[in-house]
Each structure stands twice: as structure tokens, then as C-alpha cells.
Length: 328
Ligand SMILES: Nc1ncnc2c1ncn2[C@@H]1O[C@H](COP(=O)(O)OP(=O)(O)OP(=O)(O)O)[C@@H](O)[C@H]1O
Image (cartoon, rainbow, N blue to C red; front, side, top):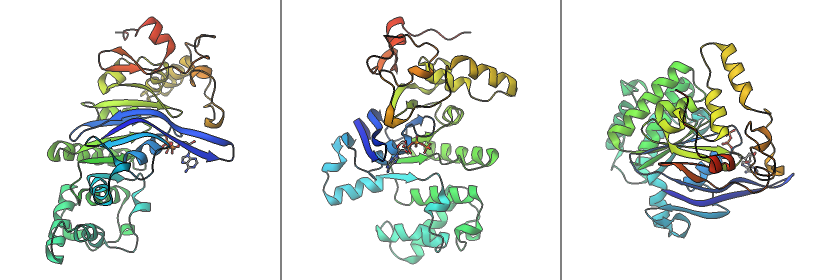
């Protein structure tokens, strides 16, 4: 799956906003791509375009090399089966009037993955086992409200697996859970990634989650609709180059809260995020950036350019001075 120069413009009361601006992203089966950014940076908008849920205003979403919006109805439906979206709030996405068994067997029967109610029920039980809801008989007759948040999230993943997807788009799928449950759901997703060879586009505001889940993959950092840094996750975490990525890394909580506060306050000039309806000129991060240089940063919008092997950043200062090596 490739997003090639995709943009999404929304008309709002404050005028048109570019929620995603010329984004290039790519993820294949078995790979993990984490898309990280603060609230409102455009992650969900990008994810919805990747899943074929909304059509981009510009650019192309390609699957197996073909623009998904040029596919005929049958091929588009095959695409939709191959790429499954797991919503951040499974309570909102699971039908409250259906038992877990009905939730899982409906897509299996509708798409002819299995024939007959017995085979569908067996497969539903198998899927629950895959997401560690065992013994499945305990869960199949239940309704979503009878499950905990973590269990609902697992059911949402099991439902995404009903159609043997090649790619799962997980949108903040663990953010509403308590930390220990979050880690166990992430561990389960990691196992599925390795066992089933499913690719993941993992959307999160939390770089610590990208570190945990996407260490062997890549990470793209978004800020106000643009990808500002991209590269192998260990590089993004240990050797970030864009001042925004650096600020995000510094904001990862330290065991000592005083240390966290002083660290993150030091590198940002402002904590205020500008409005998409009224973006600063040039680099949209410049009013907050500790490395801001008048005349350089507030003129042109910086392009994403290579700064190290496999790593790119959209920053005029880094492009001019080269990437600083991390402090040891
Ligand atoms: N349908 C829409 N109409 C108008 N504006 C929208 C629409 N959907 C999203 N937006 C705006 O686009 C911007 C990006 O939103 P998006 O939900 O993609 O961000 P996000 O990074 O996923 O944030 P969050 O982590 O809060 O979900 C926001 O300013 C949002 O208000």
C-alpha cells in the first residue's frame, strides 16, 4: 500500500484546511509503519484515506500498484477486505445489539469465507483464540457491554482478521486502555504481525508506543498535516533530526516528573499549536522551534529530504547544516 502525494482538504467555517498535505507513505505485508503526531496532525485523516474510507482531494492511494479509486467495484471490494481498519474506540465500532459470535460470523458468511453456520462458529472461536480470548465459549455469547475495554479491543482485532487481511490499520487502538492492558494488547498485535505476516499501519500520538510496537519497522512523524520526519524507528527514537521529533522524544515521560518538565520546556519556544486554517508561513513549526532562523524558516515550506541513510526530514536548518549526531 502506497500513499503517493496524498492531500485532504476540508471546508470548515474558518475556511478550507489541508488536514493532510502531500504525504508519501508506504507499508507492505509483514511490515510496520507507525504514524506519530499530536492530536489534529492529520493521522486519522491519512489512515482513513489509506483504508479507502475517504477519497483524497489530491494524490493517489495505490494497492498492488493500482490507484484504488480507479478499481472496479469487485476489485475495490477485494481491496477493502485486504486492508482492515481497527478503530480507537471499539465500543463505538462494535454493534451493541450483536453477540460476539454474530459480530464475527456475519462477515465470514457474507463474504463466503466459510460455508454454513457451524463452520462460521468454529472459525469465530479460532479467531477469539488468536486474540487470546480463551476459552472462546465464554466470549461468543456475550454482548460488547459485557466485556472490558481490553476484551472489546481484542474482539475488534478478531473481527478485522475474519477476512484474512494483508494490512491492518490500527488507529490509536490502545490509547483508551490502562497501561498494563495496553501492553498486553500490543503484545498480542505483535504476535499476530509475526505469525500471520500482516502489515500494520499503526497510528499513535505516543512515540513510546511506536518504540515498543514498531521497533523493527519505520516511523513517520506528522505535524499539521505534513510528514516532517521519516525513517527506521530506532533512528527516529535514538537519533531524531527534526526539532519537532526531538521535542516529542524529550516529552516522553521520565520516571522523574521534574526532569520531564525541564527537558521539554527547554527546546520549544511556544507550546501553542497553530490553526490549520491559518498556518504560519514557511515551516509550520517555526513559531515553536528552538532552531528558528528568520528569513530561512519562515519563507518556503521545507521539503522532506534525505538526511541520513533511510532517514529524511523537512527542516531548512537540518538540510543546510546536516544531521547532528546524537549525544552519547
Ligand atoms: N470531516 C472533517 N471536516 C472538517 N475538518 C476535519 C474533518 N476531519 C478532520 N478534520 C480536521 O482535520 C485535522 C486533522 O484531523 P485528524 O483527525 O486527522 O487528526 P489526528 O492527528 O488523527 O488527531 P487525533 O489524534 O485527535 O485523532 C483537524 O484539525 C480536524 O479538526
